[in-house]
Amino acid sequence: MTDNRKLIGLAVFLLAVFVVVPWLIAVTGRKDFYYTLTSVALLSIASAGVWMTFYIGRINMGQGAFALMGAYVAAILITQYGVSFWWTIPLSGLFCVLASLVIGLPILRLRGVYFAMVSLVLTEVTRLLSLALPITGGAKGITNIPLPGAISLFGITLVPDFATLENPRIAFYYVAVTLMVLAFAAMYRLVNSRIGHICMSLQQNEELASSIGVNIVHLRLIAFGISSFLGGVSGSVFAVVTQSVYPSSFTVTDSVNFMLNCFLGGLAYVFGPMLGTLTLYFGWNLLFETGEFQLLIYSTAMIVLMLILPNGLLSLGENRRKG
Amino acid sequence: MEQVIANGLYLGTQYALIALGLTLIFGLMNVLNFAHGQMYVLGGFVTYTIYGQLGLPFPVAVLASGITLAVIGGLMERYLFRTVIRRSHREESTMLLAAATAFFFDAVILLIFGEKQRGVPKIVKGVFNHFGVILPYDRIVVAVIAGLMILAFILFMKYTRTGRAMRALAQDRVAAQLMGIKVDRYTMIGFALGAMLAGVVGGLLVSITGVNSGIGGPISVKAFLMIMIGGAGVAGGAIAGGFILGMMESVGLTVLREYGDVTYLVIFGALMVFLAIRPNGLMGKPWG
Image (cartoon, rainbow over all chains, first blue to last red; front, side, top):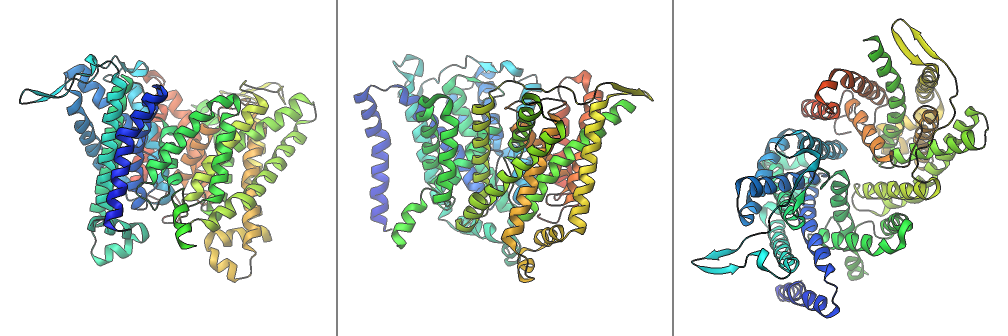
């Protein structure tokens, strides 16, 4: 693809999410879509993190743990220490990075299903910890998290106080989508950089990469750290959007879903997680009307999709180009 | 103390049998079968229907559970996993398929059998009460049957032609193929056998703990734990893992009772430390 076409694609995408979608919602009056799309944007950020670990050849089912950590850090900072919401986004991300370095150093030595299963256990450990620790408020969780305040620079209000807005849902939509665009832009840049190419070599053969002089321990930690950062950011915003966080906010099911989003979009494509999240989340919600058959249809569709497109939705375009 | 050990052994035999099926499938195809717990539940419901509803003898019902699951497992391998493994660029894609089949079974079980907890009449009445151990007879019967099945499984893998072929496949797929082993056929048999084990345990346990449609997921997670402890893809490891988890659960529930519901938190924590030191479990091959 030429640079021009990429730029046009980016412009169309930005136009779509920032202008066309809000316009469509205003026209059709389906205000509830704001919440759905905010969720999709946030979940796709976390899925992008999982994708990053797939990129170095690790099956990560621990993103739920980091999302939950991020959510709790944000909730505790806001409700108990009065920190502004805008600061908690990077802070909870950084907290997750620190946690991921401590956890990642031993467990990133594991590979294949071992890593997958340990990260699955990590999700469960985090849930059980949040039930047991005194600061997280046990099963009752933390509720009544206030809405974000205003941002002003040199006395000029850049972002108004959310509580004064008529419909904070729209504001949250813009926040979530902005973060999503930033996250995926960073991912795209990273994957197409020198580090990204080296990560690719990790995916194929770690011993070989190491023998050529790639510091694999370093790179694994970086990738895992980025992944956890995105998980934490996603979780922290989610906590504020829903104004609450419980131990059950992010569970094993969510961790598995983050992974499925990546698979569905296609593991070979940076934007796979975004498409995967959108498809799975909307698919699930659309099927709500089928009542008790919801799960049956959903899972059947997933199996069929897997049989037809085992390399993800985005591999569709590739087949066409080849054929 | 004796009571705790007896409980641990009883739990261990069942766990080991569940883990054996999972590890067999993993060893042969490198597929982590997310639907293993759901297969267990399905086996439980087959036995519930045949023994509890239709009133046929218990052994017939358990046998039917095994056969049903073997057929389902064989079909799953033949028409789902084989296709996806052939077409996909990356091996991990089977995980999505496995997760999707787990959802599918969950949905089917919920639609057919509902969400109620189901139980069946006891198979043997009475309680064993000697040497300071109290254990209902039906638990002992189930534990003995499970123990015998583990033994039978080991002998089968060790001394029959099919078992030898499957062990060869697990060791080195390409070499086995070059030696003239029909890879496709034995992979299918292996998957069917693994599913059958899950079904049989489900059938056996319905007589003690009953069954309900929601326990599939948690059972899968427990089975994952067991094969991680022992080392994935190794039969001995699965058995060891099963007994170790059974013991830990039994001891943990007694010792840690005063601290509240933290047994699993401690087990998980211990497991992560253990795997950090020994990444491939007790007896697993490196990078299984």
